[in-house]
Length: 496
Image (tube, rainbow, N blue to C red; front, top):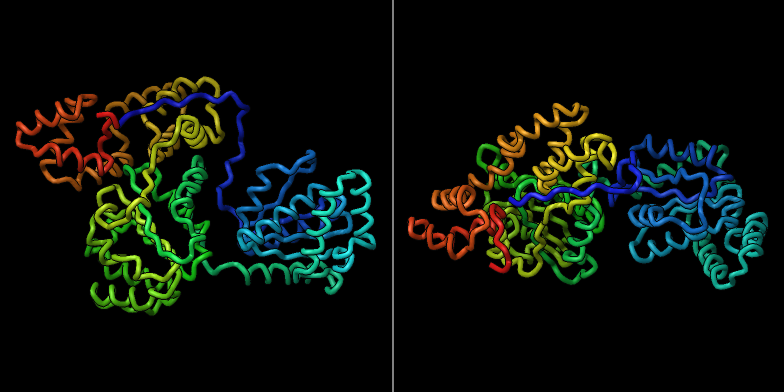
């Protein structure tokens, strides 16, 4: 394994944990001076108490342009609640939010729920009355006819969307209760998977995988593969992808840790087949008597359903053949994500070109992730920079190692850091060792010997030279080295 050291950042440190790339059920758009201290604060509290992840912008002072972070929050939300109050249309910030929300309605089928708070929907639709006066004020200041026309059209559109009018309720609490009920009814009956406390580096990985999935291509069923060494972040990334897109399918299932759970003492493949069927069909009474019956049931029940299926930690072809042998087992538009340490399994299963190699975190993200675990902020504390570089060198961009080592060192003094890092250079942390050893244990005796010889004697040597020596020892070196590379246990220079 090649280790990389992280670089320090010159930007001011942040103590706010990064936002996950798919984090909120609801985005709240509102005019702060009208409703922040009363209606919005009560609505936000009610949504959160119901377990609904809700984004609220707490910036009291806003610049001229809407921030990219706010745009992302809108994009990653399933529902936007737009509280149209008397001064909403006086804020170009609010109106730009509205434009973005309507774009997401068209592009992402985002649900919009307008709340007409102490204004009549017709006032919003025609920009007259008290609501129209605030819009006229903005127009007098801005004098940008093209922009004003866009906002005017957006207000007309949102006023035609079914929502709630505060005037129709006896009191605020009744109105809020109805809004929360409506939001709850529109959210899927599905609990998101826990992904990570500090989702550093996830967003770019998720975007890359979504480019392979292309879920907008609804007339094809596609299998994609994610491969990489143990602890590199394959499962973490796949969970985030799953959380972000599962609601766009008729049914979904994240089948965790197939390697371990397919063992006979854990219930075997029959139990996994049953979970696929019960999760996707939302029927816990599904019965699977044996593996062959399970194969037939999956084909019969799911062949016309658009499903999302994630198979995590696949380590042999038989698992794939029993759980998702062919694309036509599933309906058009389905996506199957296969996670493995062995690239050759994906080739054997005819995944084709839809393969994503999971790389280590780059030095900048590795530093941030380690710092969050070790210091609860995105940069090292004073006096710990050089020791942090040593820790990053040890972790080598491996997500698991960065998390485990950072957490283990959190709150410790400098002498402890020095001592523990010296220990890590000689003795692998048990949690990291156990994860990496899984790949080694899956090798045959010849491959184990080849791996140990390369690790001890041939790191950095030419492949042809190493192959000749190992062949002379009767180790079938060419095939063995290729298998080690496919299983991400060694890396071979692309020019070698």
